[in-house]
Amino acid sequence: TSSYFHITKVQKIFAETSVQDADALADLILRNSYHLMLENNRQNLQLMMEEVGESKRIERARILGREGVVSFSTDADEVGSLLMKQDDSCAFCHISESEALVNVPVQERTRTLSGYQYLNVTRGIYNEPSCSTAACHAHPPEQEKIGVLDMVVSLDQMAYLTHVHSNDVIMSTLVMLIMLSVGHYLVTRRYICKPIERLLLKTQTLAQGDLSARVANPSSDEIGELGRSFN
Image: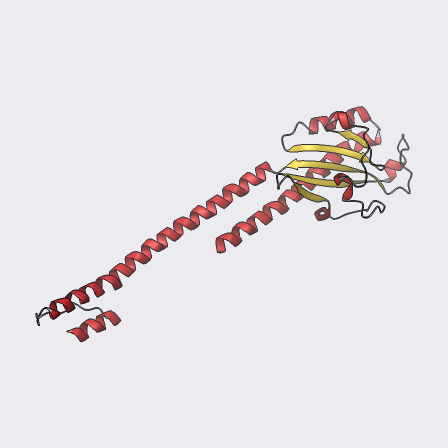
């Protein structure tokens, strides 16, 4: 039981760590793209996203405009496509066709895909004075949220570590149980079974008419007390 709770707790910790790491990775991508966005350097921003996609850990990353249009993506073929509010990438920030939510907690911006093999994290891109006054003037000052970074990261490494740790705990538990069982058997055999077998043997000898049968060196426990009574 303790091993089960330990494994469950470790899996929970690994899952929470994966969420925080994925959100930190999303933040790093946004920081690296910040100046490219200010300069409206769309070509280099798209190249940066494609380079991000070369990472084995990142399955998909894309920047969505306010209207749900894919502006930049690790998959260049989907750039310019329109996503609906019902799309999984938009559902985190929209509830019942409402306006986009602002500053959504990371726990509500992440979810697992394909049986916990992938983690989907979204991160809002918010307007700043430097954005509304940039050369492109793409976003007015009153527009608070200007886009979303949608990213899917692989959990293969974390799943592998969880699997290895779980196997280690299970094997350690099995070894401990075997050692305890062997120890219990040896103690029981020495201090309970053998004294009873000796007492039984003397009882059988007495039943055959040998009145000299005695239990040698009885112990100080209850079984020894029974041996002394026999003598």
